Image (cartoon, rainbow, N blue to C red; front, side):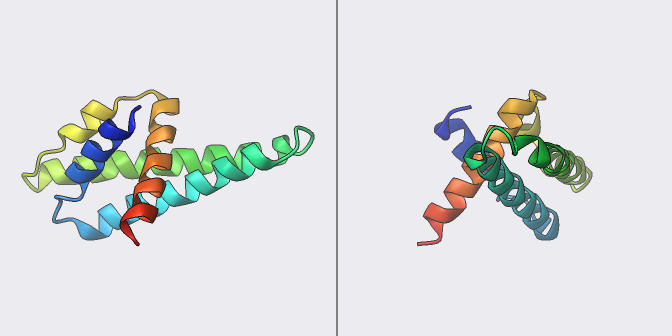
Length: 108
C-alpha cells in the first residue's frame, strides 16, 4: 500500500452519496489505527492483552469496507476501490492507517 494508492481509494470512497456508511468506515479506520499504534507502543509482555481487541477492530474495519462497497453498487455507484484494495489483511490495515493520516492532514 502506498500513500498515492491510499489517497486514490480515499477519494473514491468520498464520492459516495452514502455518507453515513462512509462515516462509519472512517470511524472504524480511526479506531483500528489507534489500537494498532497502541499495540506498537506496548511492551512485548503486554501485547497479548491488546491482540484480541486489535483483531476485533480490524475485522470491524474490513466489514465496513465490504458493507460500503456493497451498498454503493446497489446505489448504482462505482465501488472499484474495494476490488483495488484487495483482501490482504495487512494491506487493508495499512489503508486504515493511511485514512487516519489523511483525515489528520485534511483537517488543518
